[in-house]
Length: 257
Image (cartoon, rainbow, N blue to C red):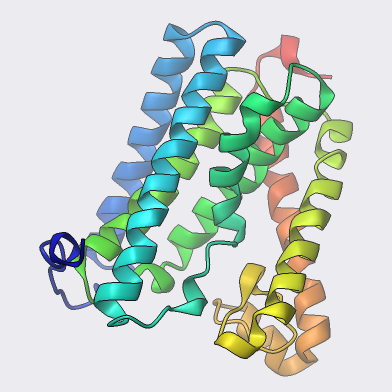
């Protein structure tokens, strides 16, 4: 296994933020994700078929994550696990939610999951492409992996919207808040439980680690960690609601409630 991983360990100088690599992958990838989502939504009309598309997307993400974790541990880390990359961030949630979708029958709870995937998945991908510094690695495969991951998040979100699987009403967004709260709670519990093993900042709300994200690290410097975390969560909510509102504005009139 290590030999196979070594064969994909192509070193590179991490590309600069807003350089050619960043802009080409971000713009072209987003447009391709949108085009693929629109085409599949037209080809696959049934909700059962749409569920399969999302489940397969989750499987692809899971395989990508498995490769990343193995590569970071055995190649980049030389056998030492990189806790900073523990797979429980906002951008990791689509992998888990897409995989558990088959467990939920048609109904309000499944719609909540779909709405969450669209609103927060697109937000996570967009925010990461605005500040992709965490994606820039000294290995080509890891850097491409990070961009492809978030392009797939765009695809999942766009596909859900194109297939009209989300609830774009204001109550529809409000119903995603408990799920976000559960994710944040789980992340904080993991931040606390795993703190002694290494440096990690799941959901960027760890009580032990300063955020490395653009803009929010400055806020934490000025307001302190607890207030900075509260502001960060507020911005997640505002950003997701902005995505939700845009989706509502561009949705067919028949879908507006």
